Length: 630
Image (cartoon, rainbow, N blue to C red; front, top):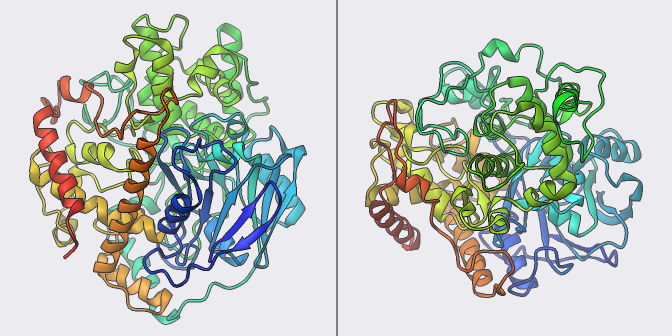
């Protein structure tokens, strides 16, 4: 039963959708509300546009893998449904405040926030928070509503309508992708604040406790879970050099040895930031908060481009961030803000990640857009543009984008696809995007299944839309997960194989993880490579909800989410007015670079996505998703 609040008038209603099956209060319900309550072709910034925030019926439950909230709206970056998920305690805070889901429409006359407290919603002005970063905003709202308040906030980037602005929850847990922060900004909505201590009941507490005990024991035996729990953790890239072609280097333009360093685990010493905001109910601690050692220096101001002594001052300022608490480190940050920009200095990347979170910027789209601009500058298409490897310039670039400061900051705030059209002929070849969204930094050439996921997933490219091909390679893969993978229709196969079966098995993996997204279950806890197998997931959902839930129900939820997202995407593509900046059709192609430029060295040497083979695999992928579930 979602709350629907109009921030223009302050009116609040509740819509009873409890009789509907299959939405679990999560993204499927949000997609239905978007389709029902908004006309086709509506601009994402139109006051009538609907923004959906939900813990759902499972998110926020004190159990392994259930600390996830979904943020959903028509994306200002892609023009289709943009869905981003935040881990951490916000979903639990939402449930404790008495809400499973909130839909927001309208535009507030003055900067405001929505307060959820005791099962009631209200809208409050907060003009004094304009321009503040996420950390200061969160602190101010907790000062007003208590230290236990949970806050989902935007920074200056969302207020400036940067098309890939993010929402950040409880200081460090970002809902990063697709520009949901800009939708907040278009509604003059600074934050959603949740206050309350109502218990989240489960039907079978003993079964939930048993699963938690199993998960805790699995931290010692499941390699990926152990990696997530330890330091520097799943997102703390460390150790051996990455194979050429595994990750993006300089906008995916370097298909051979990168010439860049991977940090050692010891490099993270002294950079972990104490936080009490880990995921409630989960024995693991996946998302660590890292930042360089603090120094008493100011942060860079928007418009202060880095060059000479000013660049050195900006670089020092980034290392002395006051926003250390916003340094939640996702797995993509080091690649997006580091190697993809030709940078391998760990402190530069950690500071840039923390700054992105405090300003409310998606590190993936920011990194992809900066890399695009760097390659355009290198090729003479963007005179005066930024250069690969210029770590000192990064603070000023980030600040300029967040504030849309100056011609370059304003250009890059549009994202690389739109920036390419502004720059002119030749630039579009270097925009590494699908549906207008920047690609994650995992190279699809040696892993064609994730390339198919980038291309076909109806909401746009995500690195966590399906498990990666190399995990199921018979030689290099995670052998312990092979039986579970086969169970869900993804039997081990050489990672580089690109054929119809690759398309079908990748579609099955997409459907599985779509089911996790539909229920607000954490993919980093779940099948096929983590402790929560499909059978244990079925037991977990049954224990929480009190009604029988099966692996088939999980796949059905995943299919329903994909069907709703694709139907919405097709509806919006058909209604797009000429010149609105979105692709004229539902784009499902990868940039030509991946079909034309093979990897030149290492174990993936020669890997390239043959265009005809990719088309056949994509057709099989679509066919698999269109078949009735058995």
